[in-house]
Amino acid sequence: MRHAQAATEEAGESDFERRLTADGIRMATQTATTLRNRGFHIDRLIASAAERTRQTADLVTEEMQLSGARVDLDELYLAPAKMFEAALCERTFEDESSVLVVGHNPGIASLICRWADKSLAIHPATVAVFESPADTWLHVRRTKVHVPELVCLLQDGKIAWHRDETTRDPQMLE
Image (tube, rainbow, N blue to C red; front, side):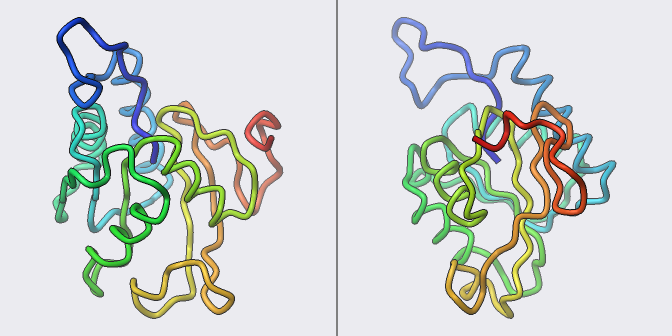
């Protein structure tokens, strides 16, 4: 998941400290509601330690009433795709079947597009849901044996694309 819409930098404030806008709060809550209503369950939540990603993760946790483990990582702040993938694969326990990673572009978008093998528009609060045939989290990395498959893409709290339905928003696929 890409964090929801953040405010512009204020004087004396670092990029790391930027908070969500009122619209960003609405977007994150709406996306979490859609995930919950579609029956998605999250065992672990991994987020960048930046304020806007932590806020997004907090809103998802609250709206979905998550009780699973959560970890906020400084190293995911503006991280490349390989660091998000490493966090997912190396900081998840085997009994956790579903993980939500909340991060920043371009890294989170790059990972989503690489795993989906598609060029996708990853706007704020966009969630991409994947399934993998891998038997352990360490094997989830994209390989010829264990290719994660895009299941659905949520944008603005709505299903924008689903593998079992036609694409509802052609703007999602660039």
